[in-house]
Length: 139
Image 1 (cartoon, rainbow, N blue to C red):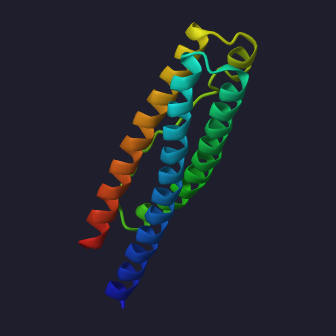
Image 2 (image 1 turned 45 degrees about the horizontal axis):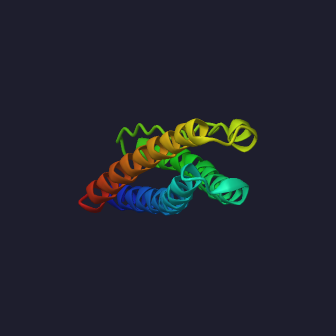
């Protein structure tokens, strides 16, 4: 009976981790797109390019909020089977106001730097979550 319960807890943790991965991959896609638009913006893309870039940033922010909720669920599931999990995901505010109203290379470069930092953080969170899934599948 105890083994069956543990197996169920592991399956629940895998399902929670897969939800996290789905949200993180959506954020990764949106950040990649924002980064591409950000390069165009730094090259003088104008207000339309800035708008598209921030639309993608907003998509990433939404996916990361979902990922945060999913991570809370994953943490609870991992605690049930005594596995610690510590994730950090933050994409900041991206200087939205400054980017629209002081559109220029320096501000665009600062926003691009924040996009790249967020992409690295999301990539790391994906790697950690994939590692947890692999460990859970071996249990």
